[in-house]
Image 1 (cartoon, rainbow, N blue to C red):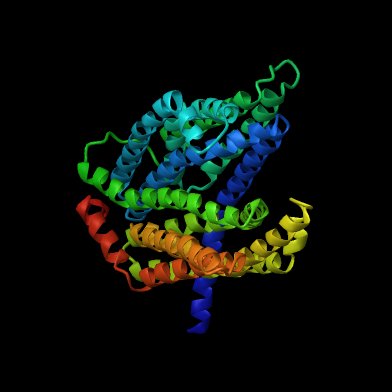
Image 2: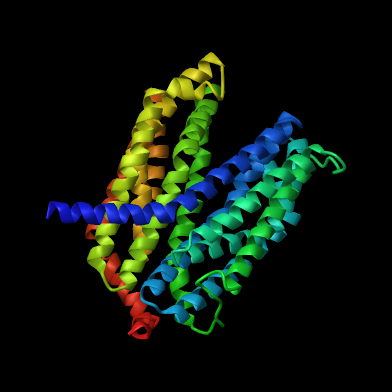
Length: 460
């Protein structure tokens, strides 16, 4: 019996690693691309860095929507792949892409007519607001393409193909990096466009990724294809699964504003230290966590599509165990090597001390964080995006913001109150999703949704 469980566990680990390593590679290069943007912009002026940083707060909005729509796409795509309901799967992919295009149009208008004003509302000086508004207009012009990129990638991943999105995104990110350096700094015969050039490189990357992934789906290289959208049930289910994920991302973005205000109450050094500590943690753990998140969605969704909820539950817990062993170990290394790691980002004594503490906290919560991320992906594969929404939203506002303010500011415990708030947030989020995965009705819900859209009947 023990040997049987061990054999199954290692089989799931091999499957998860096979699915997740392309996502990890892709995310690592994406992180490098964003880092290049900041490094190049820093060569222009501090105001340019501030402009991109403030514009990025708004640029996260289409990202959140695209990821949310991608959640619906990967859930339906993985389930219908497992049940061999290819017609429904292809129609779901087409509908998700069309919704993504439509959802991107308002951002084009926002970037053209309201970008500078929106950044000014954050308190930016006129020069910073002007640069940030111009940058936002450029990248928002390709918001529909950004949505299509995210949805198409998740759709292909749902079929078990994580390599095609990786190939496309690796090329896109490399082109983006080269474009940022060339257009931003004016290398060789290329004109020096500074912040506009950085925006153009990002916009080109969005367009390239969207076109390449659409071509992959349309051509013979991918298992998925396009189908004429006719079934309103599929559209309804896509929105039903996507809406909580979108709301979760938007709520997390909103919560960042009061939380950063709390940090600023303790001084600029504390706020900077938090950014450094979190960034250090994200750099070394996010690619793995996101890879496992996608893989757990795929293995759980396909198991449900094959009509095996017991295997889906086992696969979800097995994926979580793999995340715990790997990312948990990295978090442990970060905890003990925090001061050495953060010295790569700053040598200011006051900032260094707090940054090391924040890095230690994030190292300490790494096991809770990766389990939350992987189980959220497993629930997503079962069409349950509400439980992760509740877990993250209540955790962020209740503990990361509320507890940190009450104990850190109001009751005078200082930054230690913020450390505790961060720790409790991740513990709470894990408890909610773990309870939802263990005792929730996600398997029955997924089966009912497949029956409603005809995937079970089509498979039989």
